[in-house]
Length: 288
Ligand SMILES: NC(=O)c1ccc[n+]([C@@H]2O[C@H](COP(=O)([O-])OP(=O)(O)OC[C@H]3O[C@@H](n4cnc5c(N)ncnc54)[C@H](OP(=O)(O)O)[C@@H]3O)[C@@H](O)[C@H]2O)c1
Image 1 (cartoon, rainbow, N blue to C red):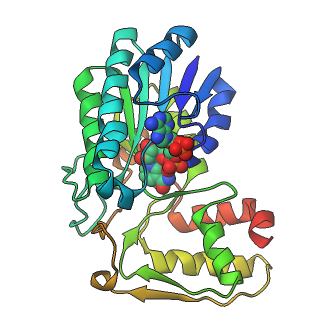
Image 2 (cartoon, helix red, strand yellow):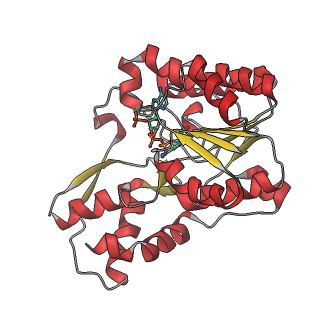
């Protein structure tokens, strides 16, 4: 038996079908009960007696975290800690997802599991608190850090193509380096890690290095290549210091899947190959 929270999250919608192949699953979202409600969590674990808890709940809006600090720390920091304490009492394996925002972004290349976190944002700091609380609880745990994830029928790739089809232009931060990652690939890596009883901290990303501009350019070119109708490419890069946001986004949020490569001899598809696979699999919705 496996319990999953944040059932409506983008990631959960991709990992649930994969997990359901191997486990009986009870999945809930905050309309049923909150991750920061310890009584509710105890109750659901008492009822279902799982061996695994997968936490996909998160207060994920980076800008909002700056204004609603208390909520950010409650959901992303303290709630995973309480959850971990309960998992330790009941010997439940806790799977938790985290983010490259725990790093400063100052490094010149990808962050691996051995790099020291130093978040600059409330979002990153609250997520790092969650990681630390889980590690300190002594529960069996697997923390998977993933970068920007896309997938499903409402991804940021769909939103981008919709904007291009509607003749809109969009602005992106110049030189903002990322490795956007296909949610299906995260799901299959989770399945592999569970099969191998892996615990600790693991980075998962479709490797390689692209700016947001390059990612959208590739999505645009693939859209045209797969025989869909022509749309103009209206994307402008804006220098970082001209972008007005409440948060200084880390300019480098690249993750190196070092443990996957070195311990498990597994290298995920590069970001461009994964994007091509995603666009082929979702061609019908993308062309609509
Ligand atoms: N998507 C990405 O690009 C990305 C990148 C890096 C890491 N991750 C990690 O992957 C995990 C899932 O992220 P996601 O982007 O897929 O999430 P998401 O789509 O933003 O969804 C978050 C989910 O958490 C639920 N939630 C919020 N507050 C809650 C509470 N108090 N109790 C219970 N549930 C609550 C939300 O429900 P409501 O919608 O009803 O509020 C929503 O279903 C997170 O741990 C995140 O750090 C994701």
